[in-house]
Length: 248
Ligand SMILES: Nc1nc2c(ncn2[C@@H]2O[C@H](COP(=O)(O)OP(=O)(O)OP(=O)(O)O)[C@@H](O)[C@H]2O)c(=O)[nH]1
Ligand SMILES: [Mg+2]
Image 1 (cartoon, rainbow, N blue to C red):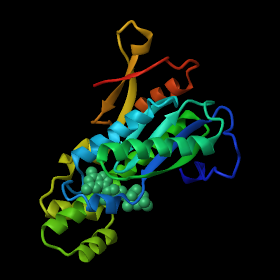
Image 2 (cartoon, protein in one colour):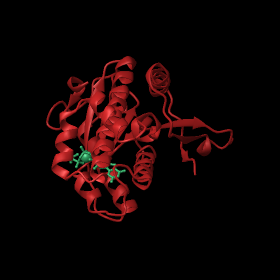
Image 3 (cartoon, protein in one colour):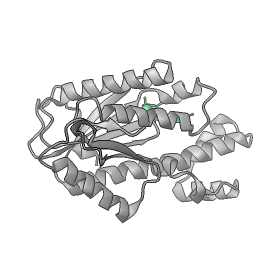
């Protein structure tokens, strides 16, 4: 998916008509930021997850028309409606600023995000993009659980890191099994990430017609592809809903 990614600032000032735009935000230096917060569980903490979800929710409600949000680890991807982006440079600065501000408020410590844009020519590339990020979540979760389980069993930081780096996914799974960690029982929000979809409500007021549904147990494979195709169709639909509220 890398060829679809562009360092747009200083390049073309507009996104081509008809393409799907995905913005990905990534926490800067979160390894160190999280290490400094000893109260957070490693490798994953449900409070960090919920701050990421609240940040993604904020980005879907800050005046940029986002059809689908996805978060895993310290990253957030947003699928925008085709045609809504006139200046990628301003959009990236705006979203990175909004994400950094929201996350900082919720964490109570300074945190910042970078942002990059991918231009995807059709809905199947949108499916590929989000499945790519989901596969990354799976790889990341496996490696991080290996690392922290080894550390908990008394292996030193450098040795644990080099053992995990030297192992491929199959070896990492075998290592976790040997350490009596059930890989298939790891929470879906860690291994597959979290989706944020708009859903319609039955409230008749225009301002309350839709709200965000958080998908903590995302499907994989073909089932996820179908969900993503529906999100891409929604992104390409002619009229955005006016106003939005967030499910409590
Ligand atoms: N403790 C803890 N750490 C987390 C959690 N989620 C993400 N992280 C940390 O966030 C890091 C994200 O990885 P990267 O984005 O590759 O690392 P980074 O330090 O942010 O580096 P850059 O993105 O290049 O600035 C992981 O290495 C984890 O250490 C969590 O729930 N708990
Ligand atoms: Mg990061």
